[in-house]
Image 1 (spheres, rainbow, N blue to C red):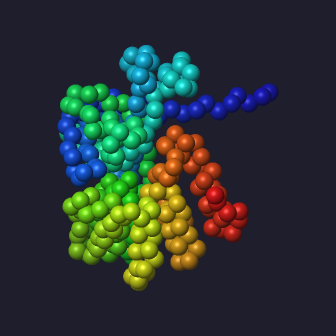
Image 2: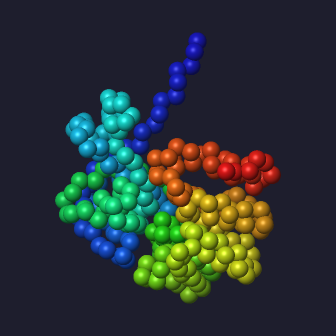
Image 3: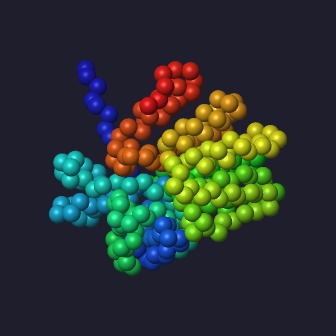
Length: 283
């Protein structure tokens, strides 16, 4: 007897509506989503993410919208475009989801949508996923990332209390992109201004220059894939941190949109791990 092929599991689809938007910085837009959001819940992680679904123009989708039905009935090229974003905040009592978007003009899909969003606009998304939250028992915390990681870093800092030791590095385009963050006693935040330098270059330099506090850190390093790779090597190989002390992920990759990046992300991560464990170099 031949085993049936495994069925692809499709996460539940949630439908909400835009409640309001806010321009946090010249390149960061906050969108608050409501509309009851029945069935949506988080698990207490600070890097929860959702996959926003953007319908293709001119395609008629099933009503009510259901991603599993879309994938069953329509060819792949007509599926909604998917963009992954961190949950900045989930208010379970008010049933409101806050998502922050990096916006660079007309570039991309989600950023322009956020800039044009108005109260009442429909929003479809699946999730949440995620896997990180700062551990109370960690000797100290290292958090490093670019703009794409800033919502998760901000959420993690809000989970920390006074007396926790945390070294935080955030790289942004310039001083106008800085945000006010919750900084309990014991937390040091360093804003790094990229200017014309490649993404992550200043961040890698700053983290490498850090004099590590005593003990073993729990590290969160997310953002552009190339600098994430470098910092993973620094922490995993040069400092000997165990994998279970690291939350490391490339949210995006220079020169690739999310469709291309997600298609090759699993192999990229595997190749990085092989290289840094003594195998074949990653591209």
